[in-house]
Image (cartoon, rainbow, N blue to C red):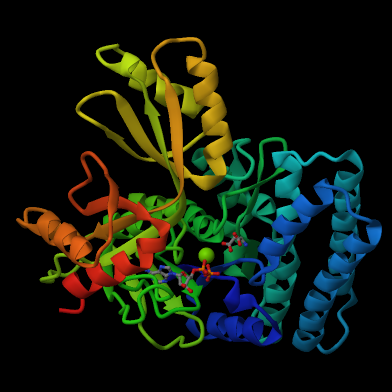
Length: 461
Ligand code: ADP
Ligand code: ASP
Ligand code: MG
């Protein structure tokens, strides 16, 4: 069996966890196995934080302390994993840290952080861990080596911060670089990190290690992709919001895709499609309890009586409303709105237009709000069409997902009754939700309440 196994942040969070990951690889690997690793948990967040801090100017002592923090964390783990001093690994990590230090000092001097330099900084989280995971695998008696995503052959566009691979080129490169090695070693590849055609480092969006695993699984035509994380699989709701969330044994690609798109952090939204296209089963498993079965994502799930599979919540969203009586009966306003936003790379998560045509509402990510407002102001300035651009800063999308809803009558009525009984106000409902998903918007303060009420209505009973 050809397997791609991805270990998430908590699963490689310290020496003990890295050793546990190596043990999992030793025990469960197929004849050919490839490992993808995330950064240690919390490290990418710290890299994001420091890249923003240095931009506003900090002294070199601050940067040195940060480098010391990373050094302690990774050297400590390396020592515990590989007690016989392995200077080669120590040197590699040292070199990376001094490179990072130089970049951070550079950013603080220049006072400019481009998306490209930000990606370069963020890449260190995964790059510092891959040698450790590889060392632990070697220590357990299995031959290994490590690669950055780019060295492994993943080539992306230049959309820094949220890059997409060129699958054709990637397939060619990965199959000539990694494929021949699979027979001899277990390669460890940095998740999340790749590079464009010119070799400039790109990242695949937060949580992107899952995507790396899916990309590599797809181009190598793996038999299965296993995502090792810190929960028992895909659950019926985010366990941080709904205590009684349960494990889903089997779920379809479409359902998993909808859940991931609407905020189930356990999988990166883009990580399902490559697997689905090739029909590769994806398993989500708990690295703390490797023997428990976890969730399997497949094409056609076993017949169940479930109408709703799971509830997910996507927070940190903004409801943006464009309005003006001048919009009534003027053709092409919606098209102009969407084009202006697309040109500024603002991703629209949900759309709704009132039948009066006097307004269009959209949900976007909080991080896109400045670009969105600028884009709309530029597009409509002086034109007597759009009068107002308003936004409601803290909303969440609630999604109710399940293929069983297809053709079942009265589901929407039950959804909205449960929500209203819980005293939650619905801010917006999307037009044309897909048949496997009903989604709507609530104030973020109500998101947990909404998730609990729906979980009770559809899953606990
Ligand atoms: P990793 O570092 O392993 O990729 P993540 O933190 O990215 O881990 O994703 C796992 C987390 O996703 C879980 O700890 C859980 O809190 C959260 N989560 C949100 N929704 C779900 C869900 N429906 N099922 C499972 N986990 C979920
Ligand atoms: N380390 C990256 C992040 O925190 C990628 C990942 O964990 O999948 O976003
Ligand atoms: Mg993740």
